[in-house]
Amino acid sequence: MTFCCFCCYSICRNKLLKRTRRKEQNNKLHLYSGRTPQSTQIMYKIPQKIILLTFIYIFKENHDRMKAIVNELKERAEKIRLGGGEKARRLHTSRGKLLPRERIDRLLDPGSPFLEFSQFAGYQLYGNEEVPAGGIITGIGRVSGVECLIIANDATVKGGSYYPITVKKHIRAQEIAHQNHLPCIYLVDSGGANLPRQAEVFPDRDHFGRIFYNQAVMSAKAIAQVKAATGEEVSAEDLGGADLHCRKSGVTDHYALDDSHALHLARKVVRSLNYQKKLDVTVETPEEPLYSAEELYGIVGDNLKKNFDIKEVIARVVDASRFDEFKAFYGDTLITGTVSG
Image: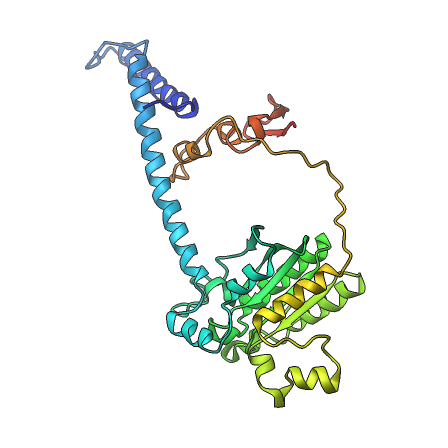
């Protein structure tokens, strides 16, 4: 087994040298005090084979332990992606509705990525009450060629009701959209506030009402706000569904027959925004690092008390492993530098 990482090799070598120095110091102390040490043999040179074997052992142990933790993280993330329980998902689809992540997939341009935010929001936050992803999915995706901020309620999680963490996640997504001038698309399927926690949802400045304030502020700054309402909000016509708002109140602009039609209309609206992204930086073709990112597992490991060479991490993260360090001899506990193109 061979590795191109020098980090663990250096650590092992330094540890063995420290042990050798301690033995030398102990021998000197014994001589000064007139006592004879148990062993007078002093090893001045550590065999390279021992260092290499120790390095391989530590690297492999780190790699295996970190790999297990990452696999566990992926399993938990996959469970969160499912949303509510099987019963809730079955009830949702039996009404002819798409699951929230299916809605997002159909909204996005085919084959384009979705950068999801805060997937573990609400994880083990409310005791035995599970709120996967905080009951709401947020992230950036490409719609009709335009990068948009997407906010989608998950009706399989407590009917899409808002917990305090749901509000916080929703507002944080709007802040990202505001700061980066991203059009917002809201896929609404919500039962309103979670009643047992309504005192934590409604009253304060950055609670539920802030959502609508943010919409107004962004709209005033020409940041488009597109809303596709489904489920609870449109099924009960007496409370204000599609017929009422399209034919009488005039609040809505389009009438959607079902989820797929609503997503088609949303894509059509975004396409008509005539929005062009302005880049203030030069975009270059990315290059893979010279060293495999898989080796990070063996370099870092899962023990936060163990040191590792951060330059070995940088070499496996940045393009072509190019890193121009500055202030290399000042404050050596902090590495600073630029990534060269």
